[in-house]
Amino acid sequence: MNNLIFLFIFVPLLSLILLGLNVLLAVHRPDESKVSAYECGFSPIYGQTRSTFQIHFYIVAMLFLIFDLEILLLFPIAVTLYQVSTFGFSIAIIFFIVLTIGFVLEIGSGAIALTNFDQPSYPINKEKKL
Amino acid sequence: MNSNNLMLTIIGLLLNLIDVLAIILPVLLAVAFMTIIERKQLAAHQRRVGPNTVGYYGLLQPFADALKLILKETVIPSQSNKVLFYLAPISTLVFSLLGWGVIPFGQGLALSDFSLGVLYTFALSSLGVYGVLLAGWSANSKYAFLGSLRSTAAMISYELILSSAILIIILLTGSLNFTTIIESQESVYFIFPLLPVFIFYFISILAETSRTPFDLQEAESELVAGFFTEHSSVPFVFFFLGEYSSIVLFSCLSAIFFLGGYNFPEVFLNESFINLQAIVLGLKTCIFCFFFVWFRATLPRLRYDQLISLCWLNLLPVAVAFIILVPSILVAFDISPY
Image (cartoon, rainbow over all chains, first blue to last red; front, side, top):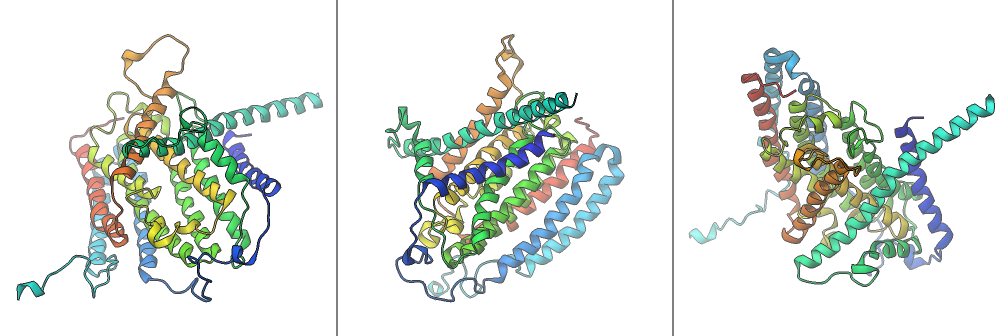
C-alpha cells in the first residue's frame, strides 16, 4: 500500500482516537445555561444567527473563483515555458491583458471596496477648510 | 505459501505504519513545542519570564495543557448541527496534518515524493477553508458565524497571492516536485533573486494561517474567539493543533521554496552518519517560526476592510506584475535555469 494512502487513513483515525479518549475520560453534565449560545452573559436573543450578511463576502468569493482559476490556468505554461518559448509566452500575455482589463473594471465599479461609502474610512476634514 | 504471503502483507503494513509514525509523531511534537516557543518568545519580547513551572524551563507545559484539555467536558450547544460541529475541527486537523505527506526532509526522505507535490499542498490548504466555514455555520452562534465569514473571505483572498508567488517559483524550476525545487536551489537560494516575491509570499502566509496582523477572525474585543467560540475541549484542541501545524507547515514550505530546503553550503559537508540535511531544514523552519511570533509581538491588527483591500488592491496587482515580469526576463535573455 502506498504510504500516502496510509497517511490518509491514519490521520483521521488519530483524531477519532483523541475524540474517543475525551468521551471516555471527561465528564458530561450539560445543563441549560451551558448548552445555550455564548452571548456575553446575557440570555441569547432568538433569530439573530444565520441572518443576512454583507454581499461583499459573497463578491470576494466569486472574484476568488475567477482569479484562482486564472492562476491555475497559468501553471501549465510555468512548467513548460522553455518548450513554448516566445510564442507561448505572447499568448499568455494576451490572456493577462484581457484579465487586467476585467480587474480594472472590477476595482473601478467598487466591487472590492468594503468600506461604507457614506462614511469614508479616512478622516476628511471638510469643515476645517471653512 | 499462503501464510507466507500474509506475513509479507503484514510486514508491509507495519513498515507503512512506521513510515507514517516517523512523520506524524515528530510533527505533533513540533506543533506542541511551537506553542511553548510562542509563549516563551512573546514573554521575551515583553521582558517577562513566560511559562517556567512545568518541567525544565516550562518545556512540558504544552503536554500538561493538552492533557488538561482532553479531560475537559465537551459542551455541544443545543442549537448546533451536531455532525458538522464535530466534522469541522476534525477536517481542520486532518487537512493540516496531511500536508506533511509530501515534504522532503532530506534527499529521498519524503513520505511520498510524487511529481505534483506543490499542487497537492495547494489542494490541502484550500480544503482547510471548509473547516472554518463549517465550524462557523454549525455552531449557530452569531460570533462564530461572523468570525467564520471574515476568516473565509480573508483566507481565500490571500490564497491568490500565495499561489501566484509559488507560480513564480515554478517558473524558475519548471517542476511541481518538491525535490526538484530544492535541488534547483543548489547554486542560489530563491530568496535572493525573488526578494519582493518572498515579501508578499510571507504576508500571504501570515494571512493564510490567520496570524497577527491578520487575525481578524479572533479580534477578541469584537468576536470573542472567532469561528471556534462554541468549541471546547477536544474540538478546540483540534483547531489549535491545526492552526499551529499549518504555521509549522508553512514555515517549512517557505524554507523549501525560498531558503533552499535541505541544501547547505558545501563547507559543512562531513563524513559522519548524522543526517545534516534534515537538521538544516529544521533550523531554516525555525527561522520562519521565529518570524511568525516576532510579527505577533510587534505589529498591531489591521481593520477588516484594510485587510481585504490590501490583498485585492495592493498585493494582487503586484503579484500579477511579477508573474509577467519574471517570465519576460527569462524569455528576453533566453535564460534557462533548468
